[in-house]
Image 1 (cartoon, rainbow, N blue to C red):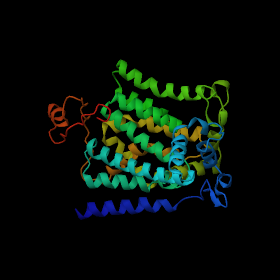
Image 2 (cartoon, rainbow, N blue to C red):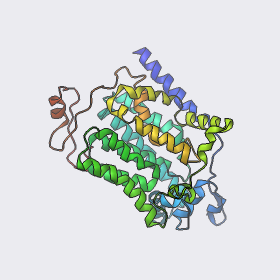
Image 3 (cartoon, rainbow, N blue to C red):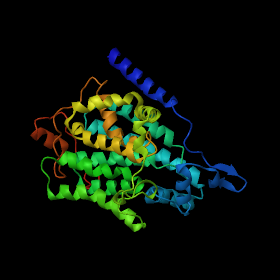
Image 4 (cartoon, helix red, strand yellow):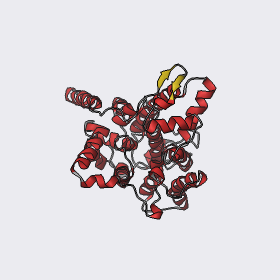
Length: 354
């Protein structure tokens, strides 16, 4: 018991300490002048998001991330709280919801003890993508929340919840189009018509948002269209010494010692199925994004459960969790599968029964 507790405390200390290994902020917070918050004093990605929330023009890819700036602007107008302050408060609320959602998933889906599940929530809040982006006008914090909700829906095979959260997630940050791959990897080897619908929905939302806002179907960063032979040059960083160092350091900072979770992924069948998703997110981040650390935050629902498996005395179950239906309790479904230790009742709602 003492060894286990020592490992938990040490792991937590190292993970939280990794927060101090950061570069200078990539964005500046708007300054408060005589006429209130001056958005013009902001720089980086945050400037485009603030302009969008205030109803001003924006450019690709920021203009396609419509949900969160619109929500912040609506709340700001309703409460008469300045947009930057509203954004910080909503980011903090999203971070807390994401931590609770992850705790719930760790306990209900992966069988972790409650204290280990709570540790997972703390590690999520202490991770670089969350702690770094929380005070800034950015969309990375809600993207992590939607990533957790999408994976939870995939695990429980709740199609309605998946369609809802993946649609909202892609409207928040387009990298969540990988939700289609999440469902596809879980549905294999048998693809039913509902599985095909789930796999086609995220790309349809991705393309639909771009066409609706006057862009090309597959437009990526700063208006580049791969169908027209235009491709971001970020991938060339891999072929220079300092570029490779920058990418390696930024990836290491994303989760710090939590990257040990990659080895823990192999302890669970459902997590192991998501290895193509993990690889796809890392590849897309390196090739299509000027940032590295923040976009990788959507890997939290895969990395953190695997990382906890490296220190938790009770290992992740190796067997596939039985697929649940709205008409049975968890105890009944697990009893049919020969596992009576994980029975819990499903919620009555078809939407949130995941």
